[in-house]
Image (cartoon, rainbow over all chains, first blue to last red; front, side, top):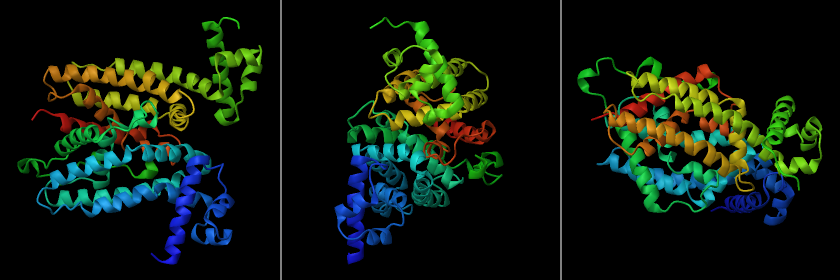
Length: 222
Length: 201
């Protein structure tokens, strides 16, 4: 790691701790500088605004996790179904951890106050694109029917989160689900997903491509 | 401390609803609300310990009644299951994605560690809705229109799918509310996925 990178990592680490302890409004760039050491100018040379630093440090763990996990997700492997199941269980386990639930809650809470919503959304969209490209490969190889892979990624995500996420976000249960619980939820979600996106019967496949009415609306129409 | 009465409680909720509508949640204060109904600040706080609680009560009351009615209308014997689900999904999402309902939801998540509005929202909103939808799906499965599965989980899958295209945008404030006509496509796509995920093999 270069000196520059390690400085950046140190800033992200301190900022993450401070934001979590004191919230967005309660943390200033000066607080972060005094934790990490160095000048405010150095801090700003790495992160042009408090908003950007906030979003970067909140998303860092999820981004690292995704890039590590997606490396192992390969649609050309012998059993992409099993790969998808394992991926689902792993992702669900990660996002249900106490720390990630708190990050998600903070992200939602601050999105409207500090105008960081769009920055978070763009990062999450970039992560989704990586999952879409795996699903796209599954569609190309015939494991899944042809459809909009971004839409399929949204549906997969919704199915994965369906059983467990809301009570965690609303602080109704404080203990994160154990691996057994997330594995079962992921198994049911992936099973429903695979049925829903199963390739259509070749005999009825004459009209290739998804129905026009099933195409996703462009974001500006929402 | 004087006994609390339901009529006084409703009068406060009514007054708060007016204030929130007029100036919005951020700018509304407990003093504004107290001025409208008269009485002391202590009385007001005796009924509602914070502005958040009061806001939640106001919005929740209005939204919950509507959502209850919509889930109550689900007809397990409808000839056309797809049509019934699309009809339900459209109405349900229209209420759930109104600006007021989104504000409550946002608040419930943001404040869930500091107050019990997260728990209230889950117990009075999420749970009864899931139960009704599960009951509907149980009947549909029983008459053989969907494959046999745990209806409670199927209900959670259906409700989560309905929101899949819009939830994140709305919670992150990327869009403030969703127009009913824009929900149509998302609802139809979600229902297609749900039906093919749960159709009889």
